[in-house]
Amino acid sequence: MGMTKVSLKIKNPESKAFAQGDFLVDSGAVYTVIPSALVKKLKLKPSFLREFILADGKKVRRDVGSVIIGFGSEEISSPAVLGEKNDSALLGAITLEAFGLALDPFQRKLYQAKMML
Image (tube, rainbow, N blue to C red; front, side, top):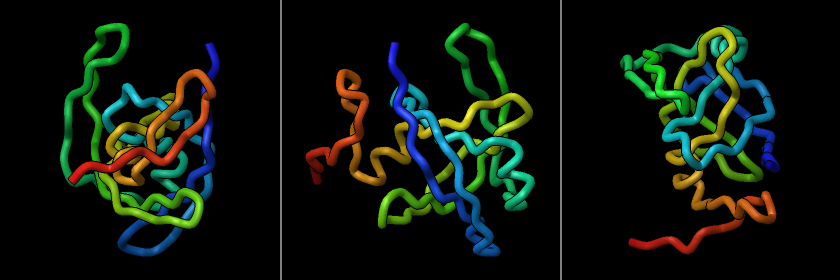
């Protein structure tokens, strides 16, 4: 099974501190997950706590906060899971949709989606 990775620029909306990282595109994940090392480096703050169900059925609780995410020449504000130790860097559906992107799982590429109002 192939995987699609992209390079994203993550910014703290309060301080404008930023870092770059590689993220696995996971259109089945609702939120983007920021790895714990970037959360600490950027001093990201949580807004709320949410419970999630993992692929294996396990329930976990994670903080969610606001970040600015850059992809290509665009930047958007997006909610993101503030990852804990061993959490993978993921680009989730909310952020994908905010950028107007969709995943082609056969070509393993992102493409501009047709946007509906």
